[in-house]
Image (cartoon, rainbow, N blue to C red; front, side, top):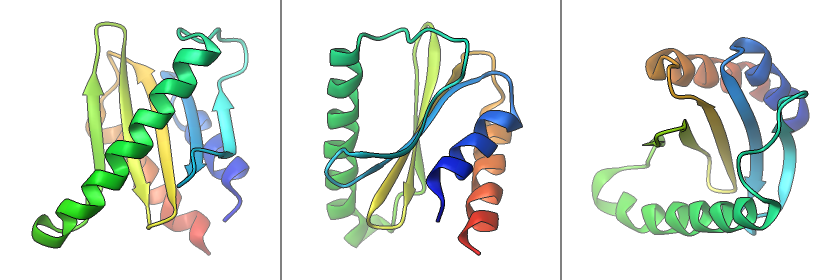
Length: 120
């Protein structure tokens, strides 16, 4: 999959989406980034810390999947933004942040449709 293109399509799908980036299991960015014209809310250090925590959370959810099934996505809602973690198979994690007013269901549905479209 072309992760740069996938993340660009996610950003293009909704102007309230601020950030869409895919990471591998080692927390290495393989595509995406912050919407052009925006300033990150987090410092680079804090962003890296958040990514590391998301990767650790993803790894721990893999263990629980033996009983509950695979995690499709997680959502954290903060005062300033919503942060989505979507699990792209066993090897990649998509992190998306959006304005807090965004419609969660629409964002998730759109991302899932774009994911399957980009698999081909």
